[in-house]
Image 1 (cartoon, rainbow, N blue to C red):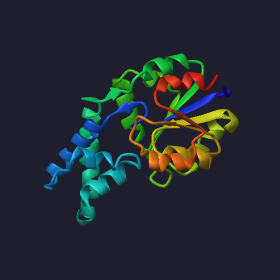
Image 2: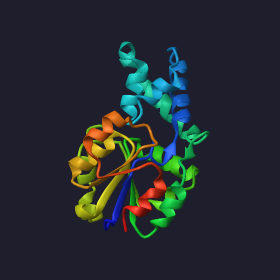
Image 3: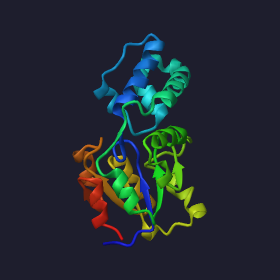
Length: 214
């Protein structure tokens, strides 16, 4: 077991399954703009690289001029409906409670306010000291800047920090930042994309984190 002081958690695909709510918000946006709706599977494939990218891909290259309006529509709708059907993955609450003495942070490409409201509605926001969101489009995962920009303020020892996420982008963020990495296999990530990155740890259930760190 490794000594860890700070744990950085991804949101979508790691802590919560919000695919339905995100798909509904995207399709509401498309409908308002007179654009054909997309399947949940298609929209899910766009999750992970930030709201701007999610909307751009959902709109399609022929509708790039509608991006600003689309983001406004999406944001207003999603704030109200971010936890209509979202659920915690198994053992998330139990695991976060177990690590009550660790410094825990959210590290996500979601806008911070989106993460905040969803985590509050699902009852786990109080476990985290801060939310590092994807509000700066020039500083998103997998760039090390998302970690480096807050490390001095948070006074984190890289050797005692780990990122827990479900996608290649999370593991790359950890590698780029020089911290430990843990891949959760049950989320949105694809094994063929993540395994070649050689995450330090792999778990099939959040509860397994108990056996990795102390």
